[in-house]
Image 1 (tube, rainbow, N blue to C red):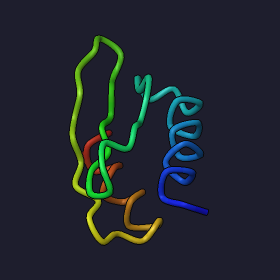
Image 2: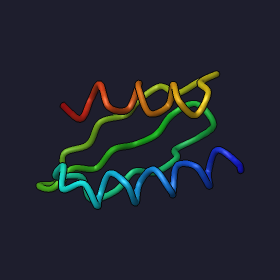
Image 3: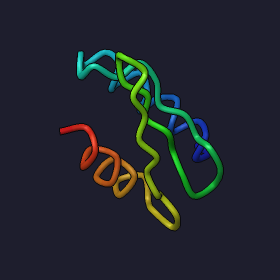
Length: 63
């Protein structure tokens, strides 16, 4: 599974969890962009992260 494929699966999980997130997108190989309801965004550094670490780093900005 590529990083882009993983982000798409993770996006579906976050949107389905009703966390006021409308999308999660891979900006480049080092960053994802979380878009919240109301159009707020947060850019998260995922450089060098494993898939588990991507989850941890992203969730720091969700709660």
